[in-house]
Length: 114
Length: 113
Image 1 (cartoon, each protein chain N blue to C red):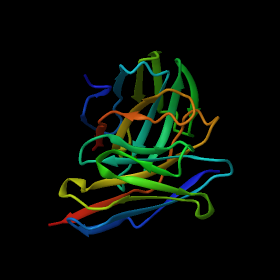
Image 2 (image 1 turned 180 degrees about the horizontal axis):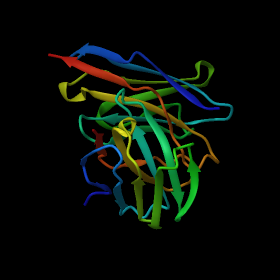
Image 3 (image 1 turned 90 degrees about the horizontal axis):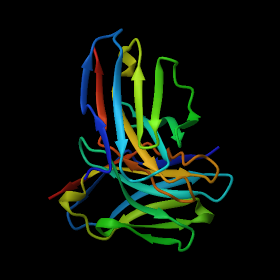
Image 4 (image 1 turned 90 degrees about the vertical axis):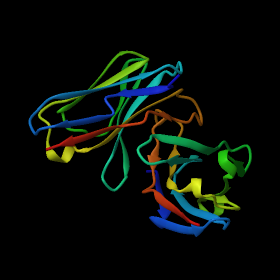
């Protein structure tokens, strides 16, 4: 069965600092991996997705993630945090033949201090 | 042009009542979903429909009944509401093919008193 674990329910960084949000997955077959962002009182917005074409995936708003099969990880990074990055971030996994179902991690709340 | 729209945005009701949430997508996707987000922000799939056919039902109580009149609409009807049903319900849609991401609506915050 698939699962996703996000290490750290809350991460706090200073504006301009590196953002690192951790995600580890468990899947018996090659997974499809996604990062979503949720701003307060809004739905989820896709940040980026792993397509298997490249292990380093670039997304919107300066975020990127690297797929590491050996570590079963898909950590999300951004070189320099902005105040507007404060939100809830979700890592998700799906498999082929699962009807498009996404399994989400528990979420990580990112706070950005001025 | 909202891609996935849900109504209402907020829903406050009493225990025992029956309520519905509506969802529409204009993306031309063939699959629609309902997800539930609890108070700890954990997201769990409830149902999915592909071209009006139910393909995922994640052991949701029978009080929850999805209905898909066409592939652009997926409504959620809830009977005999309970306190534990209070949550944010998200509708989403996608094309069911490899790596197709889900597009989410803005959610319906249901509060049962």
